[in-house]
Image 1: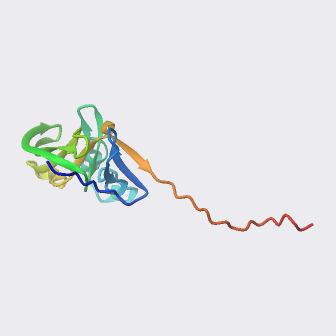
Image 2: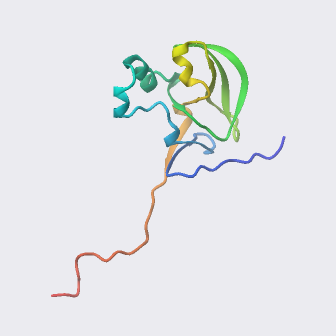
Image 3: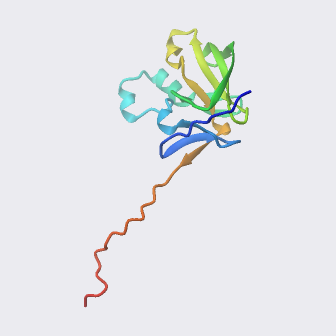
Length: 147
């Protein structure tokens, strides 16, 4: 086995492995959030599924368009709440913990938007938010020395 090279994500907010803290995905890559403008263009049933029905063995999960620092398991057919799918389990490449799965093929035409996307189980990931600190001094409006 060779050396593992990890990708460090550039961005203010990202998700990392809860067990070893390896970077996994940017918050911007979450597909399962819907903005207010999407309500006008998406049928209610599809919208409901995008927002709320991503669940896993132990609770909520998020759908991502891109994930890094993972390895994939073998393809398998899996019956899920939304129908039959061909999926691959995904694992953290650093610590080996299972993180979720990748959709390879959706057998239902209405589920094809999931193909090629990743599901990370919420309890297995942690969100990291990097606050920007500015050390630049800015003069205030109050002048201390004037009477």
